[in-house]
Length: 631
Image (cartoon, rainbow, N blue to C red; front, side):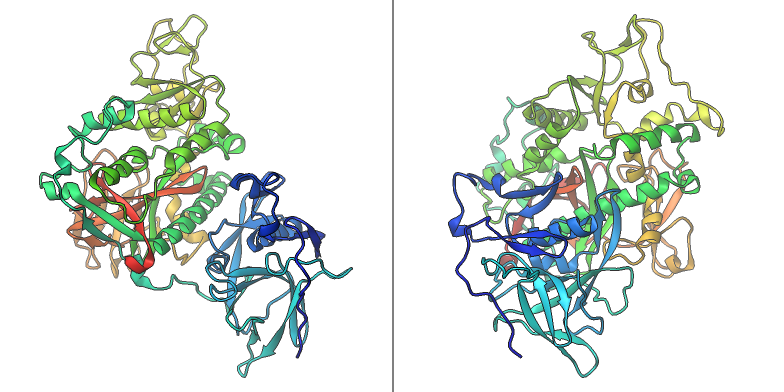
């Protein structure tokens, strides 16, 4: 059958071409005609609607996301290429941040495309590099009509709500197959927002070998013998003191000073997608926890603090600054271990040190995946609600010192005034019942290296009974030193990360995630009780509120202890997680970490150890992202 394609001369960039169903405007994306005065830089091409990011003007992805938002109030996650949409699992409803299931159906699937679903083209040919996406408008017996941007930049005929039409045929086995109009392009299939997963495609990353991390040694020219960090910079000076020199590893073998790890671009893109999607999934689970007392009870948080926890979620759910996901990445896929959203670390090494290492040691292949982390943090602080002095509170620890200095630099880059406080011994109550710093300034805004659990431990014994109230002091004798908890839980003090983030970081959320998103490709089977299924495959026992790799035990399928760590969390309740060992690369068990800033991917790093378990003492070595073809 003949299908109609528009062939008119292109309209100027940004011109209105027509409307899709729901009165969704379609704009010309003819970039050669864009007015440089109107679009002077990349930021001017960013499209927003009601403050929600839609995409890059006026590309196909921007139109598809905007169509979803206008017609349904939800959007899909940001993607690098249009074909990446086919691998998404959820859309986010903007009104309440609820995740709704999204399923992909291969071209030829027994489930027909339907009006409102997205049609996805593979990379290649007419859609080289990016692929393409369009919105299905109408399903006819032998054809399908759809609306789109960034193909033919011409005005639609009056009253027409679709851009192009393609042949639709039934296959011998009852499937639906759409023929692409361009000989060198191919349709992957369609995605539908539905809870019905029958006939859905189980999307798995292609080319598993691209998920195999490897390591290399930089050319050795005696670089390790020469200084390469700036002792005049507060964060780097603190780092030099902590590491006893200009180095990224404490290994005594000087060869290891030259080692770096390599990750493919495809693997980093999948990590980006995983980070963004997992943040939304953890947020969804947090909402479920705070709506159900039975679930919340599993988190071992004093019941008297539940109202404060819920208020924090209600008022400050969008005010998270940064967190860190820990992943196992190998040819077996990508699996997340946990989300360190309360008091994450490693930002200095990843965002500052590994880039300087690469420059000094002469490693220029690929790129530094954390090169933009500092800028992302600065943007997060600029968007925060901090007004006045930001107090950066840290324990008296060398690692926390350079971490605090790095965060201070990001906040100051955002225009904030900052002051670092080590410990609480210099704080005191004043005559007005306020907590003030050593210079007498009342504390109103705080960023902390301490975990919320540390503060809770100071009052947990006071409120063991459900109806007991913690002794949160509101004013003491002037000059007396307050406790950490008195600072962090004062109503007039705004703390980053917010109180509710202790839910994200508590391991009790992991079994709940598995219940809500069973068999999700990024998740490991996690349970509150030890089951026979675990005994047949091996498992990991974790304290629900542990950190730094403390009190973790790994067991094989015969229930033999493979490795265990000590620590101060042995009295905590435990959860059980499927055993999924880290890959071993050149003698190192290697974990990939990603940083989330405001809930979005902001960079990657690797942490390594000779042991099976990554702990606080595990090292962070340089990471480079390289082209798939050179991995």
